[in-house]
Amino acid sequence: NAGVTQTPKFRVLKTGQSMTLLCAQDMNHEYMYWYRQDPGMGLRLIHYSVGEGTTAKGEVPDGYNVSRLKKQNFLLGLESAAPSQTSVYFCASSYSQGLEAFFGQGTRLTVV
Amino acid sequence: AQSVSQHNHHVILSEAASLELGCNYSYGGTVNLFWYVQYPGQHLQLLLKYFSGDPLVKGIKGFEAEFIKSKFSFNLRKPSVQWSDTAEYFCAPRSYNTDKLIFGTGTRLQVFP
Image (tube, rainbow over all chains, first blue to last red):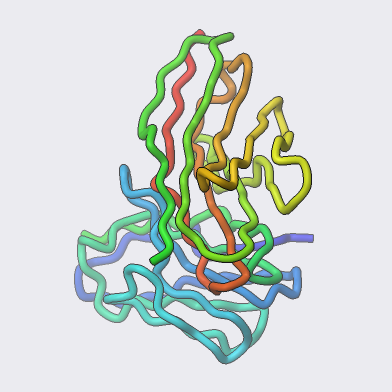
């Protein structure tokens, strides 16, 4: 049982390049989340999804897009990367609103 | 608006000292409460959770937390910390009234031998 898997684990981008981060969960969870973690800022919610085909904005959605075409996958896209998007990105999933979330191992993204 | 406050941003302790980390929230309705821990270079893992019943809950590695409904607080405690407790700790209330999962800003704990 893999839980929540994020790919890639590390990535370096040049300013203006695009990329997609993949989050996959095998727990049949409805809810999925993308966060970014920066020193002293805690975890900030970028986008989330409450089920297949749905997405919603979190606290810091600008510069990111997401898609949830399949229940098990939640993709985070950066269309034109900026140095301010250098961060560690975490994906999480949960069965419902009130229950605990399970996290992926994170993706360390550097934009130069 | 829903919010979560963790008052201690950085705590430095010696081994065997006692620990208490504060967490306050402003959520309406029924709230489930969680503490997560993030060890250096790792992802977040569940430390303990409270859904209902006894407001004093015990988690892994000797941690416990007390829910005080009247104060909207869910403080984390450990009687005697160890060097291996060095990590970042996040409080996360969850409400069935919202789809979002919001975390506190975290408390960085450093324990020195």
